[in-house]
Image 1 (cartoon, rainbow, N blue to C red):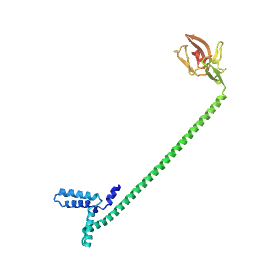
Image 2: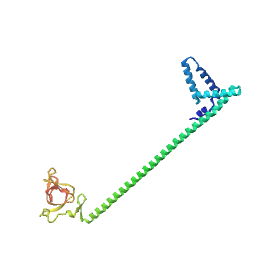
Image 3: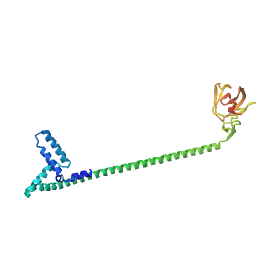
Length: 263
């Protein structure tokens, strides 16, 4: 409530000549014989009293006290009326002060409730932050464990590769290194991979090399060979500008491009 409103309430309206004059005028208008005017006067009177936190009961009590004070002193109605009004004003101010105190206590309780709710919200936020941090720490630990496992697997794989004897060949035209495992060398007991007069070994340079039925790129495919696989070259044939090789492997005979075999 604004300070000006409290000044208006705590001020004694019966000491104000303007208030008393308007009060007398409105009370006199209540006796009119016109119902509409009487009702309008009554509403204005209640508004006039309500603006000062007064009621008709307050007016009646002040008139009674004024009359009693005047009778006791045998005159001086105006002074006795003012004195009685002042006494009632003290009671009214005390009542207003009590109401203000109750309102302040209510505001204090609401503020304490809001502070308590804020404390709960802060505790919940701190709990959520802690849980998020714990989740991040757990995720980092799992990631570190995964990296460690991958590193161990890489070391094991490198160790196995280090134990496997290999042969590194260099493509004479492309300068490309081809790693051929000696485990993939032809088995001497395999008659299909034994060399006949005029034949020699070759190594596949590309992955999934198609072995065709005829020396033609449109011919059907018999099989596909893996890179680094050893084959037997039986003969060569030039078809146009393309060089083709007849090879033999564990999949059988067929034709491949000459540039795809190291020989």
